[in-house]
Length: 537
Ligand SMILES: [Zn+2]
Image (cartoon, rainbow, N blue to C red; front, top):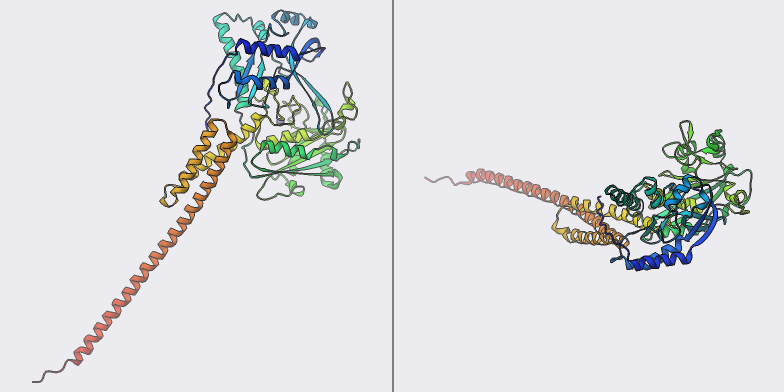
């Protein structure tokens, strides 16, 4: 499958720029606080990412001539709103951090299960509630991306934007921004091939392994209805079931001893981990296959089994790699989607993390709902949006790391439905070709082709849900076409057998008849010769 993307570039009018800047000025909040990029206090100006996205969503039609497009809005607000300046780059090099005046976009979240408030302040871009993504080239620098804003990138590389090379350099810089958005958000690849089903079952088993803290209650760590409703948004064409069960690890003595014997004694990177690989080997069908002791597979439904552990203390799952504990990602993880199974781990301290943060949020913590939604997203095929550029970690998607978003972005929804449509169109086209031309089933193949053409047209216009409906109908028609073809083939075989049998019968009957006649003739000849009256002389 090959995508052809059309790019259109529009420059915003002065009126649009001015009204956007005015809006930003009206919502900006200045706070002098520790900036994690500089590890020192700076005077930071924050804009609500959600408000900015909503404003842009409302006014974007002033820039776009068509509705069904992905819009990437690149802004350079240097000189319009407080931003780090070229001069401030020298101050940064001289460690005069207090002079810096960067600006950022922020969102505040609250954990749905256990109430932990999460402030995500240091963002330079945002989008995903619609088909819009906004990158402020002059915002930052952010500790999350470790990238410079444009004006510092220019300064730090001694670029003269008026020079021949400067123009090329800027073009490449902007191309990189576009590449990140296109590859990460607009047309992402999949981590697993999308699996289309009419019914999905997310079967969640939460296993309490705490021996230290007893609060919160285990059934408070998960919100079934949010998982269900978010997945229904992602899979609007399907029936989504979510089962939740809770058990204490001691109910399975074998699992209890496996967890105890998988605790890594390592202190590298301050890791406190339960080694995930022995647990997965024990559960996986390719290993000892014990997952079936905990999950019943339901037929005619796509099963996504989720096993979520609450470990004692600070223990979480960790992957080992040679002598290290996970050499690329953080040393421990909250979850992993392994294709056949999701494994999730939160420590008992994660559930009351607010007791250990500064400032404290007493008894508040992180539940499992967010982690499970993220991992189920992977199981369905979705990738991290920041796969090619960390800038795209700033997106309203549960698949991102930095925001604590529960929703799937519009980009996630589009990508998955597009993936399903690809499968259906490719499958149906191949099936029609395989069936060949048959006058008796022509009406079916032409109807299927017609629906495929409809699907392609909807797809091109980015009406992916309509494309899915049309391609599903095409698939039903091609399935009927195949069935009819099979039936006609069987009938034609039966007919051939009948014709051959009838032919044989006719030949045999004719043969017998002729034989009979011959014998009659012979008999007659004998009799007749006997009966010929002797001549009377
Ligand atoms: Zn992930």
